Image (cartoon, rainbow, N blue to C red; front, side, top):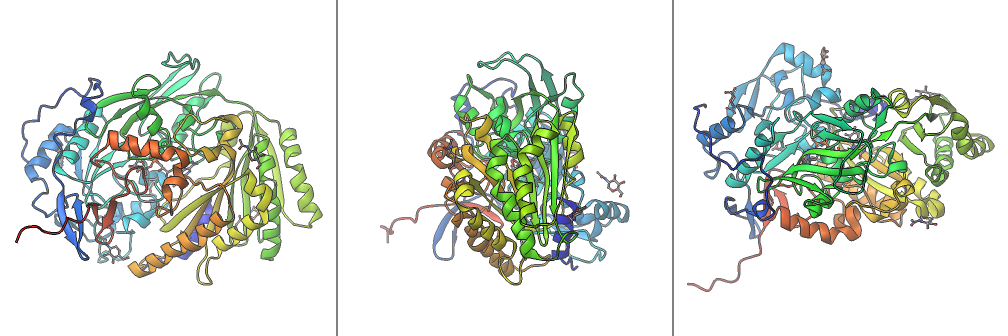
Length: 626
Ligand SMILES: Cc1cc2nc3c(=O)[nH]c(=O)nc-3n(C[C@H](O)[C@H](O)[C@H](O)COP(=O)(O)OP(=O)(O)OC[C@H]3O[C@@H](n4cnc5c(N)ncnc54)[C@H](O)[C@@H]3O)c2cc1C
Ligand SMILES: *[C@@H]1O[C@H](CO)[C@@H](O)[C@H](O)[C@H]1NC(C)=O
Ligand SMILES: *[C@@H]1O[C@H](CO)[C@@H](O)[C@H](O)[C@H]1NC(C)=O
Ligand SMILES: *[C@@H]1O[C@H](CO)[C@@H](O)[C@H](O)[C@H]1NC(C)=O
Ligand SMILES: *[C@@H]1O[C@H](CO)[C@@H](O)[C@H](O)[C@H]1NC(C)=O
Ligand SMILES: *[C@@H]1O[C@H](CO)[C@@H](O)[C@H](O)[C@H]1NC(C)=O
């Protein structure tokens, strides 16, 4: 997200205002690899809480603080000892600006002027949020609770955050957290960088396992298998972010790269890779998930496993794009590396510097987009944004190409813009490596705003046959109603160009992708539940429905989509879905993990106004007794 996008989001959200030590339970050695039977033993799981809600709907639910099924302080202390004292009560990061936090265990005084100044100064700083125990960068799914304020008497409550967090840095800690959640029927949230757009690294009343402490990185020039691949590889700890791995790779001789996202602060081995993971190298090398050689993980039954071509190949497949927080907790990912190459980049702007006529900007946008098949068919990637009165393509990425080659690929578009009399600024430039381009042309992104997000992919056929219809849909998405505006973040790439055959769980339709578009609908601070429901309806039924109607591909990206995407099973995974659903039933039959709209969660629901996680039960048969 560019600085100008952030300004817009800001404009849209007028901000108003026990501990006794106990002996450690003797668990089996987590270093030992589980044989597959052991890895599927769930016999120690706690029974869920049975509830009935108005309408006579029966549910089996997770436990919440204050209920008799909630573990005693003594049990939490035992857990704390097992994780070497790394258990924390989770307090929302903005609480330091509020006089108190009204949490599930009572009221705690939280005001701290120095820390409040720091939180206020860093609220839009992604890295600052990443380093908090449980913070979410996009605040909507925290219920936008506890924002920094200049009025300390503003209420600060838990919102939709978890209650405890394990600051894990050993696999034993991860195992302890999973086991505790399973044995006590507690909702479990795995939290890595907190980038998730759709609330999947937060959850009301949950135990959070924070994975940011897993920072190990090991490079090799000759991966030894299993499998046929020989060459460079790197094993990346669960908490490592894209900028760290790219900077380390660049320092090698010759410089190495990995397929990461365009975003420098997003993780690699967490939700990103489990959704598939796209970035500037995706046209040439496929999704990040296509490049995985092996995972280390802890299963829902608390067992340490390796997953690759030879060991647990079904889990290996599912972790490569089958959906985050669904099959296991990843400890590390081993991926292919590539030698970095000289590259060329370009930018295009059409905005109020050039014209105040929105029709001229849209005409320019239509011409730009008309050539998008041509761009990806020549091996390019591009990132672009559509904001009110603005098209900004920043950047096109041409890896392994000279400036002259990039210019000649873009020339037909330039000619057409000129012929149509569209004013613009265009620039192109050569770089010694992709990494130099990445640092120069990708911009810092911002955190701390509240918005709903959706998204859809347009394939080659869509662009070739219906570019005008796509542009009309993008217009609708940016002005879905007279009182609303939206933003478009587009990505031109085709994983099928360099990796025509999928080896991962990602939707097969991606192999003819051209443009994957994220839609953003800002949510003003302090919106009521009714206002939020209205905006969600606009996102699903106006903004994203417009994109779907302009397309034939029937595909979108689980990490960057409407959480309430209609027919999410086929929209996210297509023909892969039945396999993934069966694998979920095998590896997590009880729902120790949960993320919205992921395989096998059809019966799961968050009820009671976004708080309680439950599974719907069949209605009991008519009573036969008296
Ligand atoms: C500014 C921004 C830019 C982005 N750019 C890109 C991009 O270029 N390409 C792209 O593909 N995506 C991009 N994304 C989307 C990104 O893929 C998702 O936000 C993704 O969920 C981030 O994963 P994470 O682990 O870093 O974040 P988190 O929010 O910490 O986790 C996301 C999900 O993964 C689960 N999870 C995290 N770690 C683990 C683990 N170790 N084991 C099991 N489950 C885990 C969490 O429980 C949660 O469900 C971007 C997002 C943002 C906000
Ligand atoms: C866990 O133990 C550490 C070290 O003793 C302590 O500082 C921390 O407060 C404990 N956490 C909880 C939630 O009690
Ligand atoms: C947070 O803000 C303070 C004060 O502005 C600054 O010194 C610090 O570097 C920031 N932290 C991060 C992680 O950027
Ligand atoms: C979430 O926010 C809504 C207002 O949009 C409020 O009515 C509700 O009480 C909040 N719930 C929690 C758990 O914070
Ligand atoms: C508008 O385009 C110019 C280049 O002509 C650029 O410098 C400026 O940042 C752009 N403005 C926005 C808001 O993107
Ligand atoms: C991709 O789409 C184009 C245009 O519709 C078509 O010609 C081509 O065969 C498609 N390729 C694949 C792999 O589906």
